[in-house]
Length: 73
Image (cartoon, rainbow, N blue to C red; front, side, top):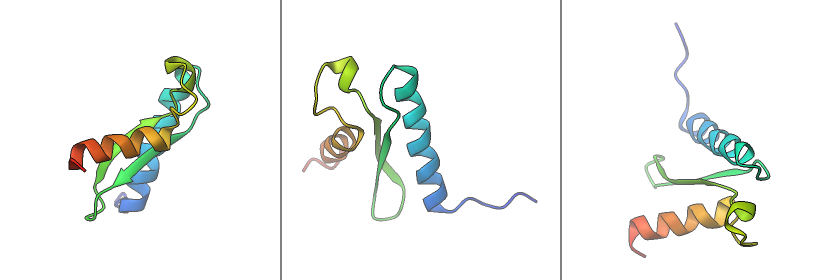
């Protein structure tokens, strides 16, 4: 029987998947997720500094902006 992943493991796997997407795009491989109060993933992102030609396009900033948009605040 395969053990069930914890919420933290699911979140970390999602962040790592985002990092891989960034790496495939030629970015520094960093991924970020924002979790809702119930532990579900609210937003996710990877670095896009090079692609967007924007020094503020860090994974964490993009994920936080997306979470704010989703929450409308």
